[in-house]
Length: 286
Image (cartoon, rainbow, N blue to C red):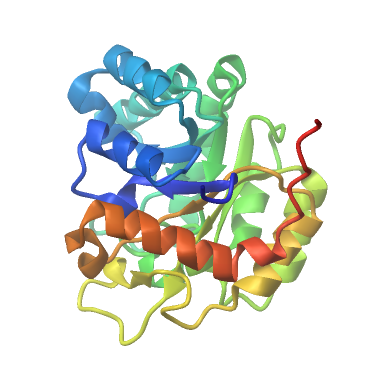
């Protein structure tokens, strides 16, 4: 059996369809999975809900919403509507959080401040629907190298500032080691997130060098790179996060490996590098 808080994010076994993605962690003894919208939509949400229920797995999060930095117009309206649907999908699947990737600069734009303000505006449009569905909009800050094309929100502090106008159950943040490990203000930001009750998800994977040509694929198993998981994990625990912990890896080598091997190695690395820094699991009452 794997650690009960370990969740296998579906992106780690990218080429698995929904049935495979559910079967792999079940066979490896996991209790939780982080799902992505595309495989869910491929079978239809009602059927996906049934398959998840039959698997017995918890859904730790649904990826992903966001991508709403574009200026007002039909494309932005479509993006906002799609995020509302994503909240509905997350609620149907029992996911407590919808992970948001803010989006990069609109084509031809250099207005970073304006793009970030449009993220805030989008949260304002979606916050009530988040409250009604019981799903938290979880802003994931991405490493600054993605600011132009993927996420104009680059630090945990920026994400918290965006969330500040909303209740924690409506808008929270994702702490992803790959994206935040370098930040000199990380401790202060995690403590702030904990005090505000805004940590909606904790994700772990490693920063591997040399960076590949496609820097999206620079993630590795914990232990393959440069991140010290002990202090980050201990801090996230200290400030009160008690939820599932996802391992989310974008790496062609990992994607090309047999799914069962990926699940096994993920659990082994988690047990060695992350689990020792978590609170002990209470023994079952006899």
